[in-house]
Image (cartoon, rainbow, N blue to C red; front, side):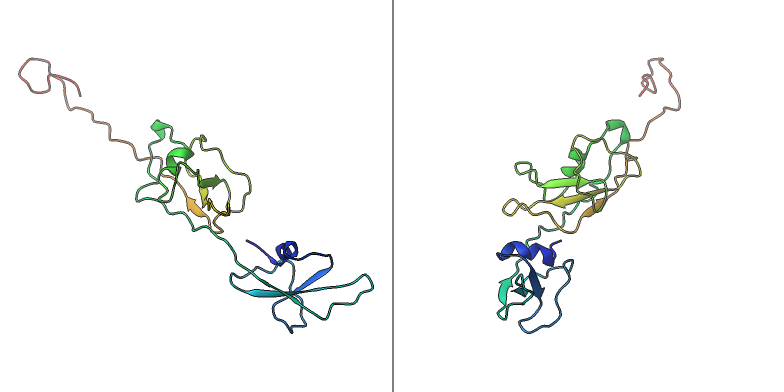
Amino acid sequence: APVVMNLDAAVSGTDITWYDSVDSTTPLADDTALVNGTTYFATQTSATGCESDERVSVDVIVNDAPTPTLAVDGDLFCFNDSPTLLELTQNINEYDANNNNVIWYAEENSTSPLSLSALLTANTTYYAVLVDSATNCESSVRLAVTPDLTDCDDVVVPDGFSPNGDGVNDKSR
């Protein structure tokens, strides 16, 4: 989620002020979100407080990986199988095992990734991002997944057991 203050790295110097047009008189706030394909304009203020007359233009390209998508029924697991985040990761349609391009977080805005060996827990939402291998940028929109851990096979209980050799209910299932 790049913002105006991230543009300071694009120009040299200090005391940089950013504008959204070449003739704007209202500076942009540091936390203004950058828009892909937009040109921003910078001035510099000297130590004596004079702002430069000339504005430098910077064309912004915001790299953003796509939001991951989950395979149909990719959130269904049985708690008895002790499923992990790696198993959930393998159900992300865009997952590439060679690039490890999926990262999970415990919260929508967290910056601390979860371990893929972490066990899935009931009633917990996990947030996935894709990582673009070329830019190393994460998707700005995270996929929220709350796994269903109740997808277990039915237990079959026979009505009876009669090991009398007649071929009917001679063995327990």
